[in-house]
Structures are given as structure tokens and as C-alpha cells.
Length: 366
Image (cartoon, rainbow, N blue to C red; front, top):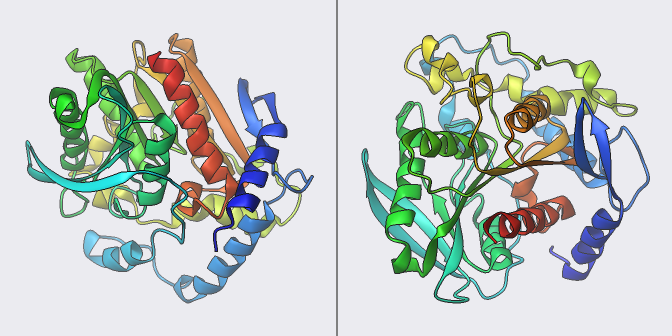
């Protein structure tokens, strides 16, 4: 169960044990494991969770890699996504809304702190490899984010693949940003103080929405917070990025950590699920890491987990943003793995992550 005193204590320790380090050629804020002094190993909470997951996944170890969409157990994988978490927010109202996008109705979940008549707002885009996840998965994280920004968070229930392939889910997300901007008074939102954020594939959608906003000249998005984002679906050779497990600091529990890092590679290939044809994988709106220019993107916060397959590409993206003169901050949480925001109220890193997003968002819009 959620213990507020214990979680707040651990979050305080996270802040006390953070340090600036240059890793892989980039300065980042590193958040060490709060309550134990270990290096190159898992946070004890994560270790326990991974061991449980390993037991539950044994039955899937002999499944053959899919060769077509019909071979992929999409509904089963969707059913096991997400994790137990808790509502740690106070004073947040939640309402459901349906808006009209270019592809039809878009269901939204709107969280508001009702602080004033001109609140800031963030459009939050859930993860799930483009084919899973939901607004329900990230509800407690969104409620806490609305509290911390003293504003509004709009969570998008976008269309999922393979039923709806690229760019339909992306269009739902961008159309939501546009709707929020054009109807800001309805939610008591200041249209000049809008950001986007998302985790994993939601991080991909968030930064691609920022790209579209830049490319269209609509200038709606002032800030992006990308949580362990998936930025490269391409097999193309990319400057400054190459995956190598040797680049991870692993000193103990090697097999358990390696399984955690490589877990995403066990997901169905998105070339079969997300895009209409393999050539689209090399579209920068699918794989933003291959974009030729990131100039004029909004102020950026990138959050990574130490033991996550996507960490190296997120770091490469940060380096690219910095080279293109985009104000960028990178935070790494040591000892944890992918999708940790789903464990808010259990992992102190999830609460601290929301605190950091709110802090950087307020800096960006002041």
C-alpha cells in the first residue's frame, strides 16, 4: 500500500543524492538509488519486481517470433501492460471529454487543479509501443502532474495500431494540442503556456507533435518532457547512436539487468504493427532521431532510466538537440528500468520525475 511518509522520505533522499555527471559525452543530472549506496545494480524495489516478472514470463519463452500481424497476440500483450500504482494527488478534478479530430472522435481525460483563470496545461500522451496502454494506465501520474503544475493535464486516448496505423494515432495527439490551444478559455487555460509530455511511445508522439508544430509554424508548444522515449524505429545507421549493452554500467545481477534492458526487443516488430509499409520507418515523424534538424524545437526535458534499452537513443537525441541550440536538460534515474512512471506511489522515482517535469515546465513558461 501507499505510505506517504515513506515515499516523501525517499523522494527527499533522491534529491540529496543527485549529482551532475558527464556520461557518454553529455552532462546529465543523475539520481542515485535513494536508500542504498550501490553502483551498477538495481534498486531493490525494481529487483523484486523484475524477479516476479521473470517468473510470470517463463511460459512465453518458447513463443516463436511473429512473421505477420496475424501471428502477434496483440490483445494478450495489451492485457498485461501497466502496473499497480496509487493516487498521490490532492484537490484534482477529473472529467471525460470527446473532441472531434481529423480521423473522428478523440476521447480525452482532463485533470484540473482549478487554481486560477489562466492556468498552464500539458497534453500527456501515454506509452504502450503504439499498440497498447491507455489513459487509465497513467491516470494517477497525470493527476499528480496537474497538482504540481497548478494547472490542467489533458490525457489523450489516441487510436492504437494495428487497427489504426501511422499517422492516425499521431494525428489524434496533435489534434488534441490544437483543440486545447483553440479552446483554452473553456478550460481556463493560458494558450501561451502549453506543453506536451509522454512516456515511451508517448514520448515519441510528444516530440513529433513538437516537430509538426514547428514545421507548420503553429507555435503552440512551449515545452516538451520526454520520459524514456522511443525515438528510433529505423535500422538505418545514425550518427552518434549505436546500441551496445557494454555501454551500460552493470556490476551485479547481470542476467536480470540484461533481460530488463533487452525486454523491449522481445516486443513485436513495429514494422508489422505501426507503419503501413517498411519504408515509413525512416520517416522522421516515425523515427525522430533521424531528423536532419532539431532547430527551433521547444525547451526540452528528457528523462531516462539507467537500465532501459531506449536510454542510449534518448541520450543521442539530447546531444542532437543541444547541438541544434535547443535548451535541453537530461535526467537519469539510476537502478531502475523502463516504464517506471506506471509505478507512482510505489517507486519514489516516479513521484520525483513528476516533480522535475513540473519544475522545468514552470521555468519554460515563466
